Length: 514
Image (cartoon, rainbow, N blue to C red):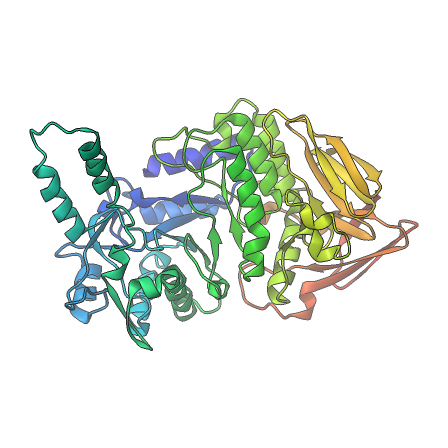
C-alpha cells in the first residue's frame, strides 16, 4: 500500500534470491481511488521509486479501474462531464454507481471519442516511467446504483424498531445483497455507439474489451515503437489485439487451481494468449503447499503473478518456510524463459494456440479428449501439474512415448522414458513433472534473477530424438516491434547421435539426450 512496502517486497525478493520482474500496485497508490492520480502521502516519491526499481530490473505495474470518481476539482471527472464522455441514464444525465471511490461515472468506452479521451490519460503514468498496466473492475462491476441504494435505505429505515420475523429478515437481507451487480441496473444506463444509442445490458460484454482497447490504441499514439504491458479482468473475443487477461478473483482453493489450468486453452481458442490466474488464490487464506503447487502449475503460463486480496493471508514467496522449494521453482521458470517466449511469440505471430488440449494434437486418440489436467505447452512439452493436496504423485496419460523430466531445480532433475498409456508417477512437493515429446526438444537457459539476467547465448537442449528433432527458436529484444525480422529465428537440429546444427544467430548449445 505504501512506497516503503514496495521497496520491502523488492528487497526481500532480491536478498533471498527469488527471481522477480514486476511489482503490482492495487488501488491504494491512487489519491482516494481516483484513476490517473497518485497518493502523495503513501507514495511521496513515486517517480523516483519507479526509476530506482528499474535500475534493479523491477517494473511497477499500476491498476486502472473502470469507474471515474464523482468529485468537483478532479480534472478527469470534470473533463468527462463537460465533453459528455460518461454513460448516461434514460434522461441523459450521467449515471451514478458506487465502486471503490464511492460515487463514480463509467466512461463510455463504446464511444470512439470517449475511448480516445480515456486512453490518453494513461500518458499520466507513462510519463512517470510506467511501462505496464492492469485494467480492473471493467465488467463493469457495480457495488450499488445510487438510485437503488437510496430506495434500499428508505426501505430499511421503515424496519427500525420492528420485530423482524424470518420472512421479513430474509427480505431485508435479500434487498441489501441485491445491491451489488444487480442485473436490472445494467439496463438503466446507455452508450453512444456507432450503431446508435444502446442500453448497457445489450453490450455488457464489450465494456472491458473497449476499456482495454482505449489503452491499446492510446499506446500506439503515445509510444508507437515500444511495447507496453497490458491485461484486463474483463474481456471479449478480439481483445487480444490490445492485451491479455488474468482470470479474475479466484479463491485459495485447490479446485480453483485446476479451473484456472482448464481456462488456458479455452482463452487461447479465442486468440487471447497472454493469460494467467492469481497464484495461491486471490480470496481466502492460502496454504504453503497450495502456493507451491500453484507456482509449479504456472511455470509455463505467460502471465505468472502472485496476487491476494486485502484481509487475506499475505503470500509473497519469501513468507513461507519452504523457501528453497519456491526459489527453485522460480529458478526453473527463468530457465524456461527462452522456450516460453519463443513458443508464445510464434503462437501470436502465426495465429496458433500456445496451450493446447491433448486431443488437438492427438486427434485419433479417443482417450486424449477426456484428459483435462494435462496440456501441451508450445511445440515440445506436455505439462502435468499436481492438483491434489498431500498427493505424492499423479496419474499421467501419454498418447505416445515421451521423455519425463522430474525437476527439483534447474540443476537437479532426473529423466526417464515412458511408453504410451497410463502411468502413476511420483512427484514430491518440490518436484515438477514435465514431458518432452518424441523428436522434440526443450531449450533451457541457466536462469537468472530477472529477465535481463537470463543469458540466451549459452543454452541447453533437452532432446528426445529417435531420428531427428528440429526446433525453431524465436527471440527478439522484447521491447521493440520488429517482429518479422528473419534474424529473430534460429533453426536448431539435433540428430539421433547427439550431433547438432544451428542456422541463424550463433549460440553455444549443450545437448542432453533424453
